[in-house]
Image (cartoon, rainbow, N blue to C red; front, side):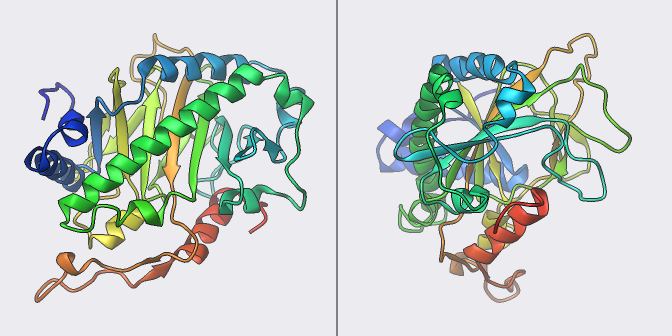
Length: 326
């Protein structure tokens, strides 16, 4: 584990990809320990090129600077490639807490053709090519490349988590790879908040894991076990991995799903817009999440009942994005 001044552990992933069985197990144990203690871990050298991440931020800035009229024309589902679809969501569209105003952020999502996300966002129409989207060819190409790279990285992470629990290596990976979603986000820190509004309200992730990169502007905070909010800074060449609620259920609270939020940076002299990428790894249709045998036993009963992916995914989507078709 790398030395780091931050309170979220940083793990060098290189030995897992290129090392022998003992080295891979050592990395897997480090990840498991970090996710047990904080629910977050930075993974360095995960084969996510920093140049591609930086390009995604540059393309995001250009895209989100388009007029509202142009962006909102991309709100229905549009075709990015034969395999991928995309959809734009305006400010205040996502509600973490339905009693508060929607979050002050906008985002563009990329998801697989045939995924539950596409079916939910379809709004009773087929995905179609868009002249407006085709005009953003560089943005779409970069998003497609990033989606592919994140997909490969997620597969490696799922393998490491499986090995850490002495499960078959592909136990988690095969239960998720049909429902990966890339979200490109923009948080306009110069825009004032309404009462009780957040840029990103406190929440737990409902994906099993999430991969995050930030453009160097702070604002992401996580709540520690002791209840303290700490910053999750940008670390170049490292991706921040978030444990979501399904993984907590699977492991009987061995791995923690930790509350996090996006707020104005504590250094108020730094107010440029914040851009980030989030790669959500949701459960495939038909998957059942039930407590692992190794995470229960005498004196340690399962804390959660089993859940089926379809109902769970749809409930979470309906709650956060009212009006989607589920």
